[in-house]
Length: 284
Image (cartoon, rainbow, N blue to C red; front, side, top):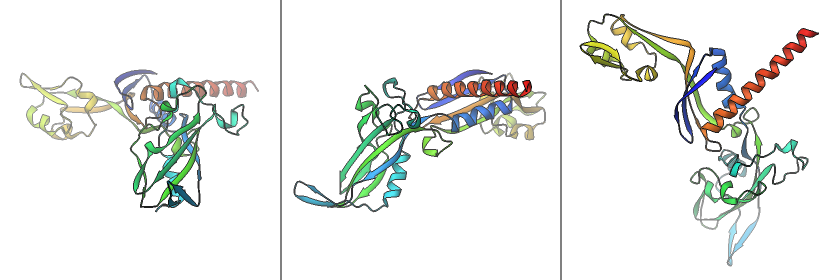
């Protein structure tokens, strides 16, 4: 399989997968969705009881159940490789799963109403040996968590650990992972080029010297809807099942390039592992 990058941004990517098959394309898609490890908040400790702030008493209560707030915090994207640091899985860490700077990040959140509590209010307390607190801040600082009224307060400690989306969607870094067959367009003797051109919803065609042509890059924009073929059967649109146009986004906890690199690495390792198991079975 070969990959040609069409567009690459921090959290978005569009590429062509060549010399592949539908099975291989779907394997890559599923790997990006479920097998990329990332950090996410997994446990939250809530302070209960009154909180005194400069002589004013606030009640540790919010309009939402604690469980709902915890679920929302779990979906807040937090950095997975801050300053290039690679976290351990908690169960595989030298701390024996107790939680330390090598496998977890602790965040504190302390806000008093009236206010809207945002993801940016999560303050890193501990995590990542030698990693700066600034690099541990949530990837998006403006996600609303809960609205507090006057004298309402929330004080929590949250712990982020490494995992994959096979266990829970909060560890899913890639979103909207989709692909289509690479469109192939053949143009015969079209009687009314303008009619066919105007029928295309993606403006794939152009007219040159009175003849219908595919504009530069037009094939990539084709959505295989066959609106052009319905106007004139001399235009034939098919999908190439050896090339696929992929698009995906990330939640910001990893860059799009990191997700693509990691997916290719994981898929390659899984294929190698499967090959070794098949050889072992064949030798028995």
